[in-house]
Amino acid sequence: MKSFFNWELVYQYFPKILSALPVTLMIVVIATLVGLVLGSIIAFIRVEKIPILTQLSAIFVSFIRGTPILVQLYVVYYGVPTLLEAVNIDVSSWNKIFFIYITYGLNTAAFQSETIRAAILSVPATQKEAAIACGLTRVQSYRTVILPQMVRVALPSFGTTTVALLQDTSLAFTIGVIDVVGKAKAIGAVTFHTLEGYVGAAVIFIVLSFVLERAFAWLEEQMKFEQASSKKVSLPSLLFFKKRRRLKQLHYKNSS
Image 1 (cartoon, rainbow, N blue to C red):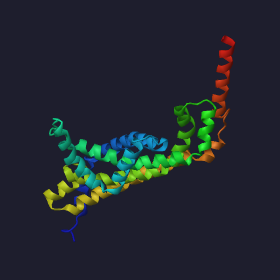
Image 2 (image 1 turned 120 degrees about the horizontal axis):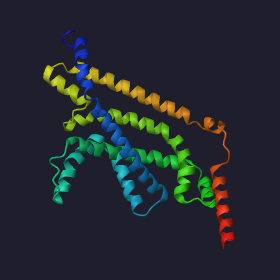
Image 3 (image 1 turned 90 degrees about the vertical axis):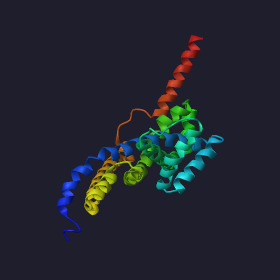
Image 4 (image 1 turned 180 degrees about the vertical axis):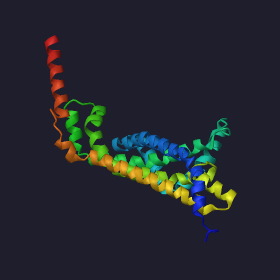
């Protein structure tokens, strides 16, 4: 049994595997940021039903959600250089990690766009109409009325997607990126003790997943509607904007 699995080797390999953790965390952070920005844009396009862009974004989301991320990774890794070579752009000197960022960013954007879109649609349309009737612009109505409620609705799904993204980073080693799993595989290839390295990687992923789950659970607790309603509010934001609009109109009439 000792020759098959040795706990001493787990402790010995663990610091080496842990040294690759920044690569994994950077993939999660960049993919999350790209996913939030691009996903919000896609969700806005589909909610507002912008011609042509709505159809294109729907095709993009369907492709990403309907194919494994490993397939997407190979499409980006082999397809993007081919497309760029057609316009005389050489990317042979690019670090492989950039293709990981592109793939995971696009993948996260597709899933987050559906989460954000569903959260926006969960806000009653009458609130948006009331905001516009009070003189708010479309951007102001999204920022002051829809966004605060949307975040509360989307947060649980966003947390689940982020934890799933952390697990999906384990495929980065397939194109030669040395992340946590890539380091464990490299150690196993050299020492012929593969299982010990993967056990160390599993411990890292379990701890990170637990930390992320607790962090999002704390955020959900802080943003509950019950807590928000218990806080003292001087005036609703819509009435504030309506009053300000009336003051501007009075000032304009007096000056004219």
